[in-house]
Length: 310
Image (tube, rainbow, N blue to C red; front, top):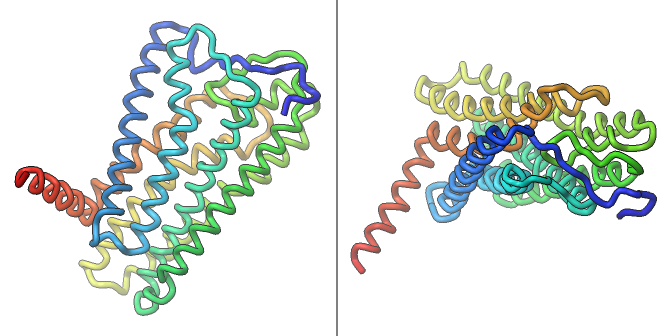
């Protein structure tokens, strides 16, 4: 990996240089990461254990929670450790690995959100054909395609990152490795690479966001023909999805669809979609979804009952 480079490691400047603020970062990120893992793992276990959550919507929610857990893990643990470290050194190979993981699980989340919107569209707009269109076999194929798409995207990003030569400064003004901060350290003209990054990451986030918004507009428009109870249930589900989409896509679009310039707010925007959104997703889906909450209660009731009998 390190050919044509005199730099074998980087120093992450992190979110702040102030010692007191570093401790605050440690506490806040630690709480968010633990909450992310507990919340998403609870959803994963609930969906796998419950017989009532066998519909395609929960099949895709399972993979969204899995992607969220891995996406947050690619960033949060190192940020937690670095918050208490005097020197935040990351090797070149570790940096490239983080770039790959960040984009792999991030793009997986994008694709799963799109699949969830497709599922809701078919369920609401084509209810009679829903069982055939969204069969288990079709859902499995769609998830496999999502994994393949995420892999292709992340491989493209890592190839761009490996093309960057580093021969001088190694201070990354960020808390993680990504193409945007790395391009500032490269000793070459990065215009073409930035253009390729925008056409890759920027295109995926922007296109995904547009597709999702159009699909939800169509869904909401079609709800006029449903009963009041059907509208209420569908609207509740779609509202949850729209909240997640806005929280995730808007910061991503801000970061990945612009010229190679940095702003003071970049790190805070990035921490919002890498740490904040994975933390909020379980709450959005469980607090607004009666079926998931009921399934959780049943599972815990069965476990407590079985423990009591022992």
